[in-house]
Image (tube, rainbow, N blue to C red; front, side, top):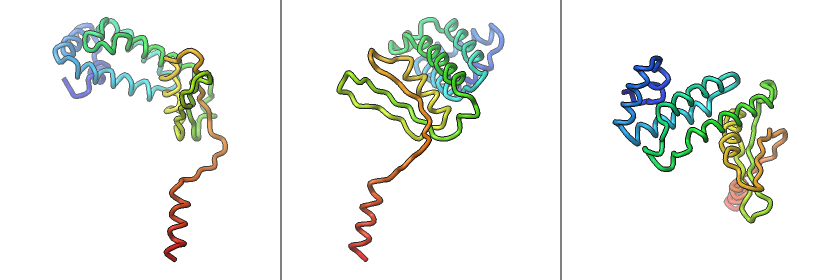
Length: 173
């Protein structure tokens, strides 16, 4: 098997190849399955308009090959459901925001106004990075939490070190 189990999985076209792939992953255990899941995450991050049906087909195949992913790790008991939700939410974002409006800087905000927890912000994202993070976090929102994917239209930005550097130069000069 190559070092990229996800590429091997995608390349398997026949039932025999899929069965051989399944046995290979089972025999290699945790690490091989983790690499397969990392490949799925990468695919979910990169997929764009029109790619979701192919991703969903791959998820169906993976669920059929590995119906009990918790045998590799208990933390993966719901991984196929999680990936399906991410794909669905990302598709919603892709369908909602037209391609011609996707250029520029985006950010994802998470907050629960009824708790003392901090607002979480992921700034400086491309549209595709933002769409993935939105879908990732949207799939597991807790009660009263909300999530926003928003485009940055205007931006004023400063770094704390700029003022300190200017003050140091004035003192030395």
